[in-house]
Length: 273
Ligand code: SIN
Image (cartoon, rainbow, N blue to C red; front, side, top):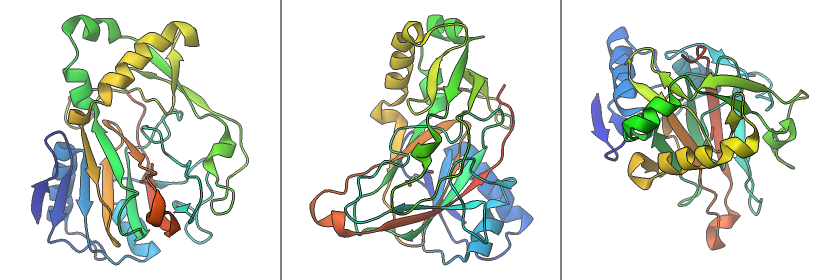
């Protein structure tokens, strides 16, 4: 297996693996190492059935259902993220770590490109270790022990008018440490996002906003990011504990007439510490 870094901050393309087959323990270990080192790994030119994609994601942990977006009938843990031609794209277009409003947010996800436009509709990722490590000692001290409330927003936001079906449910929130430690690497990472973090525990939204705005603005510096251009059959797996991501809805002009269809399997995780 070859591992080619994509950017200075995070991301690596892997080649020489066939994800439709059961991975040997050695290859699985190499992939996990690459994920821990690069935070998001990309593997192009795969041809996966739903069963094969589901099984591949299971190498990283248990596949879980999305609380608000309905999965495929036969594969409830696979959600189909569809952007139809001409549609105002609203799903996942703010930087976030998936499902931060759960008590045990996912450790990661596997995203498979079923149908993608010839250009446009990339996905961006951010390294939250770097976001933490580049803060001053004073700021690190201020953040240690702080917790933040992460809120789902309206469950209706997890469906789209024509394509993606939502599930009934109440909005959810969870309190998590603002700085979390990765269980395998032992490194600390910032754990807030513009998508979900509302306030610090014990403070109002207004009191929290200036510091949250600073932290999110700092984390989203371009030098902490990478951007992946999709091709049909490409797969991305990200470590959701220490990275943020978002889709880029740049469907301007000609590219607006294309559909974009992605299959995502969410991988269960632990309570952040
Ligand atoms: C996601 O946020 O899970 C999907 C991102 C994308 O569609 O690029």
